Image 1 (spheres, rainbow, N blue to C red):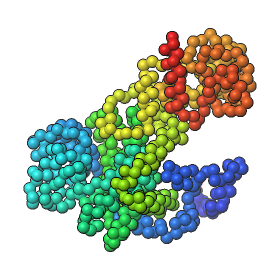
Image 2: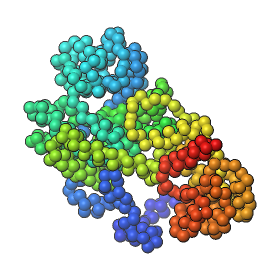
Image 3: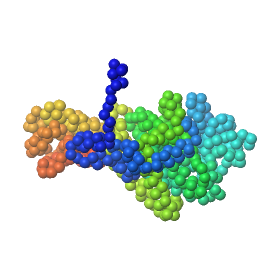
Image 4: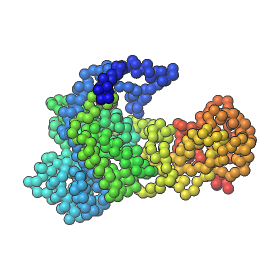
Length: 569
C-alpha cells in the first residue's frame, strides 16, 4: 500500500486552471467579485501566488525580509504581564507570584493609581535588579518613580527596560532604560486603520527626534507600543511593516547600518466584550500569536475579563497564553515566521508604501503637532471608527457571542472598565442587553407551513434579536392563512415576525396581510422589495428582517416602539 501511495502523482495546477474553476463556481459572475477591500483601501485577492508576488513586488520581497530579520534582535520575546492591584503591598505580592510562574518582567501602568508604601518600594527595588521594568504613563507625583533613587549607583547600569511619562526624569546611571514611548495605542483605540497607526508613529518620532543631537542618541531612548487587534494577518504585517518603515526613517537621517527599537505589543481590547467573556480568551490568543509572529519584542496579554475586573484565575489564563505559545509551539525559535508568505509579504509591502506616503503628507502639513491641531487626524479616525461600528452592526464583521451566536442564558457581567478603553465595538450591544435584562416586550415568531421550511428563517430572526437581549416565543405552525390570522388577532404580543419558507412567502403574505390587526407591529423575515413589498406595507407590515440589516438600529426601533406603547398604556 505504501509503495502504491508513493507512486501516486497529481496533475500540476497553475493560476489559469484555478481561475477557470473559480469562474465556473461563480456561475457567470466576474472573478473580481471575490476581491474585497480593507479599511485601509487595500484590495484582498482570493489567491496569492509566487507569480503574483514577483509580478507586483519584484525584488522588494528580499529587501523586506532582510530588513525584518536584521532589525529583530532576538528570536523570542519577553513576557510582560500587567499587574492590576491598587496597593503597593498587593502589587508586590502578585508581581512576585507571577514572576515565579513565568512572567519575565515588571509592568506598571501610571494610570492605575497604585498607593505605594516605603516597604513596597524597597521590595520593588530588589526585583528591578533582576527583571526588566516597563513603566508607562507616569506622572511626576507618582511614588513609583522614587524606586530608582533607592538603587545603588553601581547597580544602575545593568537595569533594563523603559520608563516614560510627563515631566519625569530618572537619576543618573540608568543607561539601559529607554525614556521615550512612541505610543500608537491612542489612535488605535480611537478606531484608526493600520496605515494611520504606522504613519502617526513615524510623525511623532520625527518631531521627537528634533530634540536630540543625532539619530542614534534618539533611537536609543525609544520604545514603540502597539495594540494588536484580531485581524490576524493584518496585524502580523503591521509589525513587519513597522520595522521596514523605521529603517527607512533612520536612513533619512543618514544613519548607517540597521536601526532597531524595541516593540512592546498588547492585546487590543477594541473587540473585547462583556458578553460571553470567555470568547475574549480566543481573541487574546489570536492577538498574542499575531504579535509574536509579527515580531514583537515584549508582549502583554490582558485577562479575558479585564473589562469587568480580573481575578487570580483570569490573570493566570492570560499569563499561560504566552507560556503555552512559548513552550509548546516553538514559535520562539524563529525570527521571521511569516517571511516569504505570499499574502503577508504583499500586505507588508502595501502597508509600507501607504504608511510612508501618508507620513510624508503629514510632514508636508507641518508635522505631527500641526497635523493633530488641524483636526484632520480626528476626522480620518472618526470616519474609520464609524465604518468599524457599521460593519459590526450590519454583521459584516463578527463578534462571536455579541453580534452572532449571542447566548441569552449567559449572565450579563456588570462592572467598570478599569483601563477605560473607549470605542469598543461591543458597547452598543452591551447597553441593549442590560436594558432588556429585567423586562422586555413580548415577541412572537409567526410561523407558517412545515418546520423544515420556516425553521431557517425562524432561527435567523431568533439569533438576530438575541444580539440585543430580546428573547422570542414561537406561535403554533399554522397550516392555513386563516388560522394564522385568527391567532394573531386573539393573541397579545408587542412585536411579531412572520416566518415562511422562502418560496412560499410571497403567496402567503399576499393573502395574510389582507386581514391583520393594525395595532400590532409585525415584520417579515427575509429581504423583499418592489411591488409586493410596497403592497404589504400598505396593509400594515412594518419592516423586513434579513442578514445585513443594521442590528443596533432595528433593535433600538423595537425598543422605542415598545416604550411608546407602554407609556401610552
